[in-house]
Image (cartoon, rainbow, N blue to C red):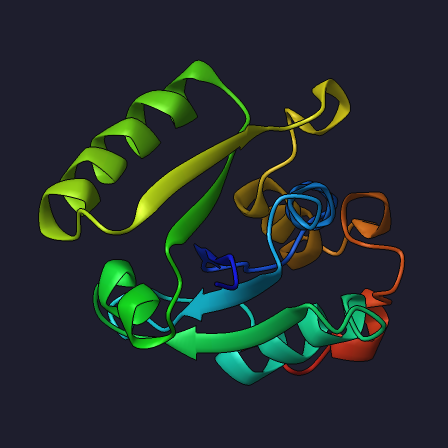
Length: 160
C-alpha cells in the first residue's frame, strides 16, 4: 500500500521552510500532496491559483509531489485521497502546542489518519508566511525566504 501524506496549509506564500519539510518527508512517504486550503473567510495575499502555481513550479521535477486545494476538514480531504498521514512542520514550542491540539481533534474525528511532525532546521525557525508576506507587501526583498525556483517579481500584480 502506498504511503500518501497530505501537507496542508495556506502557503501564502510558500517558504523555504515549507520546501525543506516536503523534501525531507519524501524519504518517508511514497507521495506527498501539498493541499492549499481554500478558506473563503480568510483574506489571502496571493490568489489560490497563484499559490498552487508557485508550489507546482518548486516541485516541477519531483513526480511524487502533487499540488491541490481543498475546502472543509483536512481529514476528510485525506480520506478522499487515500492519505493516511498528515504532515506538519514545527518551528517552535508554540507551533507544537497548536498542532498537538489539532492532531488530537483530527485523531478523534478520523482515527485512521496519523499526524506526523517534522522539526524545521534551526535556520528556518524564524521564517513564517506572515513575516514573508509582510516583507513582500512592504516592497522588501523576500527572495532569501522563498524557494530559489521562485522569482517573486513574476507574481507581482497577481495578489488579491
